Amino acid sequence: MREIKRIACVGAGYVGGPTMSVIAQKNPDITITVVDLNQSRIDAWNDPDLDNLPIYEPGLDAVVAEARGRNLFFSTDVDQAIEEADMIFISVNTPTKTYGKGKGQAADLKYIELCARQIARVAKNDKIVVEKSTLPVRTAAALKSILDNTGNGVNFHILSNPEFLAEGTAVPDLHNPDRVLIGGEDQEAIEALVQIYEAWVPRDRILTTNLWSSELSKLVANAFLAQRVSSINAISELCEVTGANVDEVSRAIGYDSRIGPKFLKASVGFGGSCFQKDILNLVYIARSYNLTAVADYWEQVILLNDHQKDRFAQKIIQTMYNTVNGKKIAFLGWAFKKDTNDTRESAAIYVADHLLDEEAEIVVYDPKVSAEQIYRDLDYLGTRSPAENRRLLTVVNEPREALTGAHAVAILTEWDEFKQYDWAEVKNGMKKPAFVFDGRKILNRKQLEGFGFQYYAIGE
Ligand code: NAD
Ligand code: UDX
Image (cartoon, rainbow, N blue to C red; front, side, top):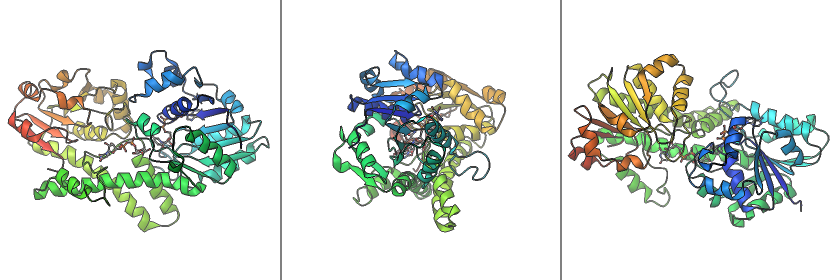
């Protein structure tokens, strides 16, 4: 049995950082170095003040405090970490391509390839290379070819070990995973990785498969989860015209043990860095094998999600007498879900873009997202000039600043603190009629209507 003493992880992002922190916490005898090209990200991981870690995840500070400096290190010296490691995790980003063939659908594998070429160039002894990033099925074959053809004649064993953590619950998800999935061909390499997880995960929850099943399962898991959200969101629209209530429908169907209660919460639309990207990727792969019916089926999950975001914005405009021009709309939340500062593909971005087209005056409050990030998200869309975005949208640090004098409140993220506000007082400070558009269904209709709000919630 090959004993792993040193691990390198390339990519210190939302996956590499938390995943390696927990592996280090649970395996104090293994030295783990997480490397990234982004100096400021690494500096933040090394910041003595744990409030300055580059990503916000409940409980992560305690894990980092326990392992950092003991057997967990963060560095920009990628070559050294690779050279010293027995096992190398690749945890770099795999965004949707924004150019060339597959633009808007296929995964951009340039970071993966750069990483593979660097490993090949530097490695002077045998390495186990672990795909932690989410990758198109059969990427391991490309990786192997690059490693073998550009390397120094050493042996590389490739494993696929996709990550299933969700943001906001990354630490509990890592501490207590439903399963760990390891795909590979070489039994000894598989066992080496199994042993690392066995430090805290029961053996019967560590599943092993061939490489292709493992790679594909990650895309399929995200597609199934997102499909549930789109399914219930489709039903939410039907509820609104029939008098049914989508929460009641979710509860009624979720009690069926074959359906189950999770991921049936209707919302303004799913966001996050994974769902859309991974389904687009699945669709692209299916089309590349000429499986048109398969591709069309999964594409619909995305189309419905786009429709849901659009529909929410339209509802706001329609309800406010068909014009939001010059009206102050308070946005509560910008992150794609609560308990994270991640805004990638957040529904808030698209709803805001739509309302800004109508010259609304948006004031955003999010407890964890910075103003710089919010403007970066909007500017990235390229719908209007950065100056226009800053003229029409402001970001505040206090919810009161957003709410006072607003014509309407739109809830885009389900942060717990929004439920605690004194909504009677909020109403007093707003223009009348005071509207609330609850895209997350976190407030109580009876109570809000009692305070005199015009209250709209998805699916009611
Ligand atoms: P991220 O953008 O937060 O982090 C990726 C990091 O890799 C960046 O800091 C970047 O600077 C670094 N990087 C890129 N190329 C590099 C190179 N050649 N050398 C060194 N560093 C390099 O991305 P993420 O959210 O951590 O996602 C990483 C992968 O994990 C993706 O494939 C994603 O699909 C997958 N994934 C993400 C999540 C999630 O919740 N975010 C969950 C499961 C799987
Ligand atoms: C997802 C997967 O859950 C995780 O396993 C994978 O590793 C990465 O992608 P993440 O995107 O971090 O995780 O969060 P998740 O909790 O899945 O939520 C995704 C989006 O769906 C969020 O915008 C969330 O608000 C939305 N959602 C989720 C709903 O609208 N309704 C639900 O019932 C569940």
